[in-house]
Image (cartoon, rainbow, N blue to C red; front, top):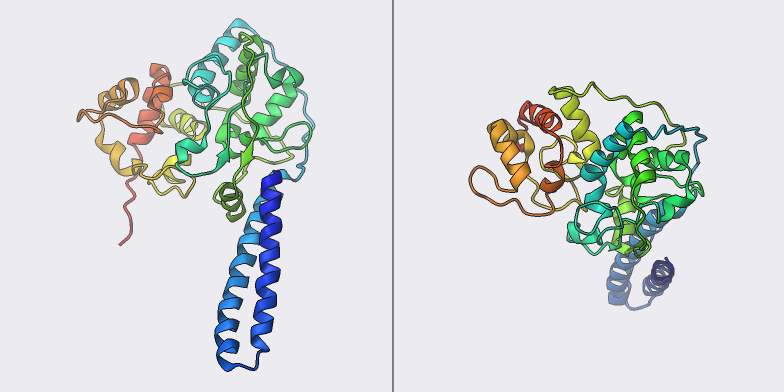
Length: 323
């Protein structure tokens, strides 16, 4: 944060400097200095001012305190609930909170690498019982999953991910698993966003959509091979993060470039094609699916979940780019 503050101060100083130079140029007795200096100095002032405001807004949105919702949560911790939570954690959490995409959730790699952009240090933390969650209540963890806000009011990365779409039942199952998982010592570097991260945040490309002080109940459709249950999985699984809000492959940065248009691709795939691709990482043409497509995580869905996801994606209405 200190480096970003210094950069912000430098940008403010440049705004003042270019503004002063522009003023001097405009009041010059030399016509060419007046015209050229006024135009160039004015443009430089405006550019620096715009960058300063964008980065400043991104920094403010990220670090300002957020309302903390009052909440009372009781986790039963039954064997069935823990098993469901472990299954969900393998699919949903391990890709970020583990360095190899597998349990335990000891903390992940730098998420900046997936985007291919210099976004700074963005590491998912250790969330085994030996990590910071030992300092949090069940209600605190539930609140983070739903709103992305810690008890202190600080925004967490969960505010930028669609885990808020998890049903209450599934969210509590994950908490039950986290409480009963094997403790593993270890820490990851703290969040240290780059100026580009702050700029994308200020522009709204990286948007905390979950930071809300109100928490409403969320339910899931019955677990079955239906498009409705498939849509539920696609929503909390974050398909839109890379493939765009309508899954047509038009997600803005920092989403990785080149994500395909699922509304065109998936209607052409058979169920067997989809299962093969998600379970082996190789599609029906022999093409090996490359990161950051999380096929390994998706392949951990059970047969009912994976087929439901297929039914939802296969039924998408094709959306083609307008000419």
